[in-house]
Image (cartoon, rainbow, N blue to C red):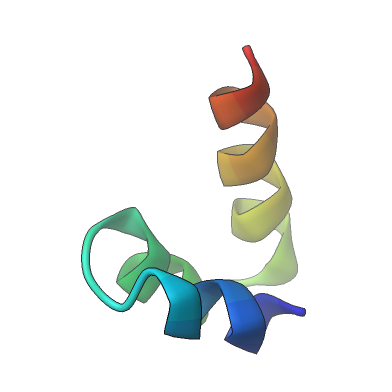
Length: 34
């Protein structure tokens, strides 16, 4: 799942998420929902 998000948004915060833990991915998704 993380790889799919990283591929969809290769640049920006998603590239950072791809090299981070899953917790960062959930945090990014949660922050975008607000």
